[in-house]
Image 1 (cartoon, rainbow, N blue to C red):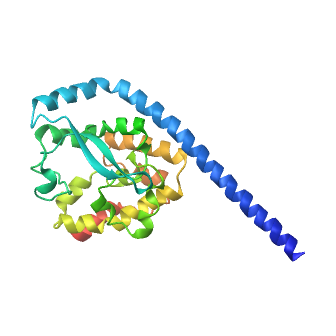
Image 2 (image 1 turned 90 degrees about the horizontal axis):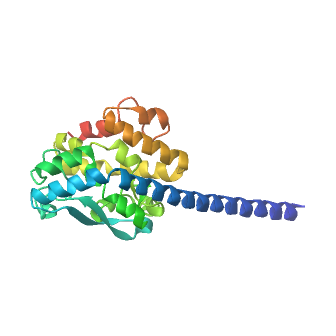
Image 3 (image 1 turned 45 degrees about the vertical axis):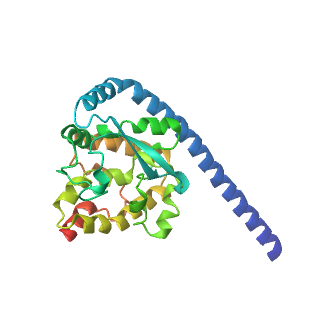
Length: 255
């Protein structure tokens, strides 16, 4: 009797795992279709802005239009991310290195506007169409920043493709300002990574089309209303969610 019960239990477990695996595959297929549709539509609708930015960048600053940088990608495989050029060519070897501050002298005059409005991220539409990024996902990090995550986080977060936007991007949407206000920007940068890791793990545990569409909506909403706290009302189980944002609290601790 006990043997028969164990066999039935093992069969149920296998069937449940197979069901979960099929759900994941279905989600990934649907997400890829949605990514292509959104990226293609965005490329068409935003092409006037993209063309205008290309012309302005070509005529100003160092006349550089695009910037490619190696980032950590799907299943921890590096890829090159595309952005509009907003900083001086040798910026990684000047000043605060990979850390960019609000009034960073390495940022060009046009680049400052592009970064505040997030227009500098638009070329990542190409990354989405190529398939090495998604519209929503974990933040695509430099390897040096990726190494600040605990090992258990590094092993998991890029089982989903990195995204143009994501839960980490929403919570730390004004990271440059927080870094600028911190007494020691590098210390603050290191301090926030355990919490960033918890955010990306939250996304991994709660990944769904509902979560993705909510993040897309909240990204647009936060551009219109930068001080919004709607994210904490929609995602009530975010790690550390409370009246005062965790990002602000961390900044005060390091300031």
